[in-house]
Image (tube, rainbow, N blue to C red; front, side, top):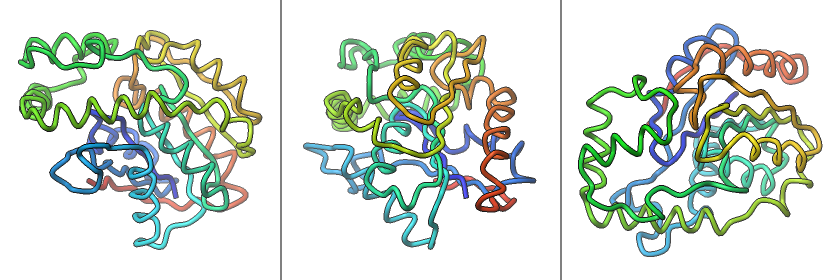
Length: 249
């Protein structure tokens, strides 16, 4: 089983092209993290990674999933790494793409100002190499989300908690297969961050995708799927990953 975790503004449905390409060979789920304060999973006043790790653990427990491959983008990568360190017996391998945890360039100096469609469009152009992969409905959804002052403050607090949770001391202790996939044009976690992850992780390999920013699964689903497929093939002989795929909200 492969469990994919999107980043802070990622949506499970944005991973569908990847899941669809790999569904014939591997069982895959994309799990949206509880990043809306109204969901009540995280403390609105002090959201942190511990709550997100607990959420993933609860999901696996409810559905009886064990020994999964965790695949995380940005904040989802940081959660995946931390979960693997906490529960090594439950994680077969890691796939990290544009992962937070070592360095992540903040947007608007950590504050959301003048939240409107123009602001969101500008931020999207900074995050992604090609914003054409985002439709108007999604961008309008982000505007509506950030117009809520409490939600905006909630995400700023979570981003600050993430930036304070440095993974450097945790990475050398992870002794499992790890695939790193980075976008060449990633300006949030630049390619040199991927190189640092590779240096600190004992069993990591790094692939860099061209014409790609901070979200390879969204921006380059075909290239990302091929790299991911090769990596999963290297694992399949041991634990027999099963076909079938779906996205989970």
